[in-house]
Image 1 (cartoon, rainbow, N blue to C red):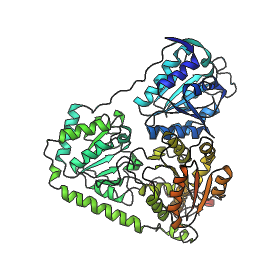
Image 2 (tube, rainbow, N blue to C red; image 1 turned 60 degrees about the vertical axis):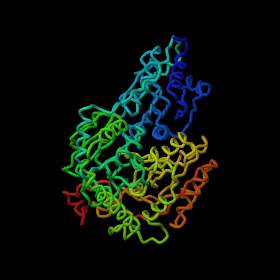
Image 3 (cartoon, helix red, strand yellow; image 1 turned 90 degrees about the horizontal axis):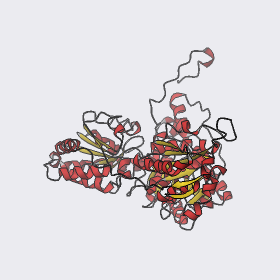
Image 4 (cartoon, rainbow, N blue to C red; image 1 turned 135 degrees about the horizontal axis):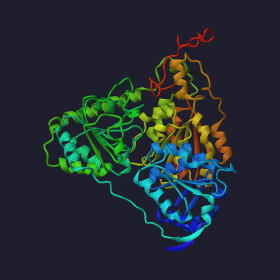
Length: 583
């Protein structure tokens, strides 16, 4: 026990947890602790908006595998965190949101910047710690950091602002980390038996593989079984795309090859994935989920087992440890799939080749609306542009994607050979996600190129963070798809509302010019032949500390909607609205 102030105890606990970077906006509520950050070796990275700070903490956590930390002023600064923390929740990111609140002597009186901050985050955090006495500062701070790692998700550390100023004897806790293990023996035996009997096993590699650093273990098991590996929705980096057994992403705008292969499966090994709806619903006209297959599901969270799909065996454990245990258990067994191994490998090659050929030929969308608007010769077809970006992508790039139609279509073209390379808004699907997340990723891995994909609507929610990239010397590249519309929602108006466009058309300024005015590099790209070179140059410029905005001028053609069952055909009862249906 050492006597220190509560601010010192707070900062020393951050140091013990290995915190090196904190994102946020300065505020008087935590200024006494902030004053100590430089002496403690903690870098404070001021952002333009607190939502951006939460997203940067998310990106930092997902790339580094360590805590991402954000902090803000009580009241409005903290409520601005909500969207970013919700996104981190669905990405299973160990983000710690530090939320100073109004002082204890004025709470409930409606004072300046006062709100009840705990209920706001109650459904989007894994744990909420409230410092109810200054003497508990180190204890509860440490618990929030521990629980973010133990539960793989964001936590909230709520601290009354007057509690930073007390002094007491404190013991700074050591971090608590546990080994998750390989699950129960009986379940492992059952899973191994099913895999040994499988004639066409397929592995679904999810985010849990990345969190467990289990990619090599997954490769070893796939090679033993001769099993194709599909990646779960928006976790394209969970298995190397250059591997012969890789078959692409499942789900929305994913790989037809992967979908056709998993449709043949008699046993599916769902490795570190909850098998969420967007990763299992029909796509490209294919209802591919194998209804009669045996499902083995592995997840570190027991509540995920059997949540979405009926399973035959559930294993609660670390995805890497479970995979290694299964590989060892199968090492001396006779595998039923061995007899058809060569035929299966040929099928994998054929399906992948067919899908790649289709993607190459799929230069533009073919629905009536897209044909009508896709003939603008002054703009690029989105799919052609995305293919060029794919070919020019640096091997070690980190790519974040926003929500939107073209960003979603990019799921077919984003391939990675190393984990912790793809960052997406996941099922929360908020706009304004990609750019700040890329900045956080760059803070975690400054030696790697960081690239954000954003539609023009989402871009206007986040481009202010160009200033953060410049001020903090965190150079990134943003690829902005300028098609003058909220594309994902316009697709619904095309399909359900007879092309009555309300609120979906955008009149845009020059985003490249705005970038240049802010001090960044800005370039307008309107020819497919220029796309690859522009991306390569922008990534090289990051080495010189330059942030570049590539404004891609693309047609208004649209890919498939998120879900065709999301809306119903409009029905009108009143005469004045009788024409507002679908012809």
